[in-house]
Image (cartoon, rainbow, N blue to C red):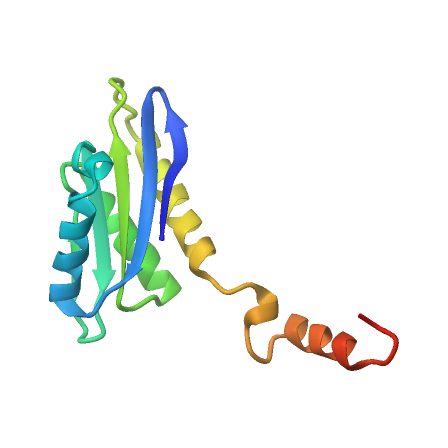
Length: 141
């Protein structure tokens, strides 16, 4: 899943990709595939992080100092394992300073929200139970 235009600020554009991966080889394969897409190959930074089910973590800032650590921290909080998140920045000519970190967080949140199931899709959730109840009551649609 890719979202290509999450944030625009002072000419820079930020996008995000989230993909399931199987081990380190899966990470490298996805990054290689992403690099084959001209738009991503021309990006200034493709920062990424992943938590692997074998207990290992990997991250890369790709020149955007601290970006990989931010992505990794958010993955840890979410408990998302074997999913790679790549935040891409196309530099617009103006240094963003610390604002770039807020943009990285916004991108990761967008990916996590797009990946998360809706409340009515979560088995056993209150919303799913209400939806099922309405569907089974006579005269309701």
